[in-house]
Amino acid sequence: LMLADMGMSAAASLIVGAFWELPGIIIAPVASDLIARKVIILAYLALTSVSAMAFAKGAMSQVEGVGVWSMVLMHVGYMGLKAIPYIGAIPIYVFGTEIYPTTARNAGSAVFMAGGRIGAMSAPLLFEAILLYTGSFAGFFYVVAVACVINAILFLPVEVDFGDDTEDDIIEETQPLAPAAA
Image (cartoon, rainbow, N blue to C red; front, side, top):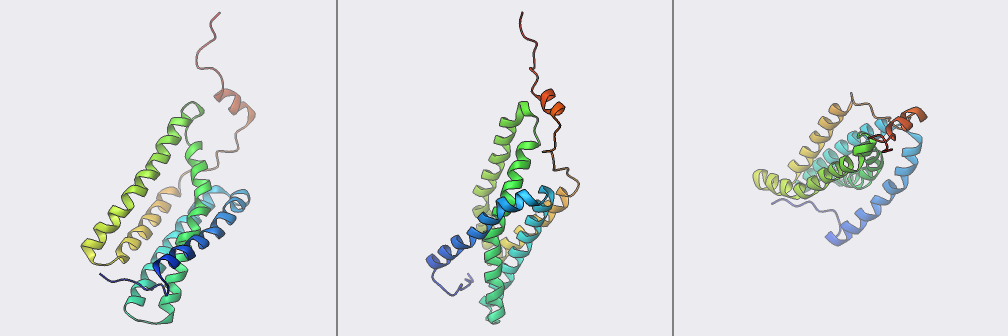
């Protein structure tokens, strides 16, 4: 098993990673107010893909002893993988609720969020399977990068900005399903 050296202990790497989440947490609400949701989601997918590839390439080169640039590439990829998901989370969850009609929004949102939980639970199993099959951790990050590219391609034709409902649309959706009993 090849292990990359982040230049610090595992605990210190986790603490540094937690601090690299802060820029994403700060940028997310600002970006969500200023930039169209579709643009943010596509940028999030593209930057996550680039970050995953940078981390994998940098870490593998660092394991092979290529030099200081591999360490820089690995750390830049790591920073991206920690900060960028927060930027994409707000528009993705807003989109996940808006794709359902008002009458089914709670159930639809629950299914949407459950899909994310299933993905979070299956990711470690996928990582271990790829590690076992290839003998390297880098394969997992390349799979993540390719999955982000595929997701972005599939997301291109999707209409995202549902938030521009007119008052008539809102009133129509909130009408009772059955007439009131007399």
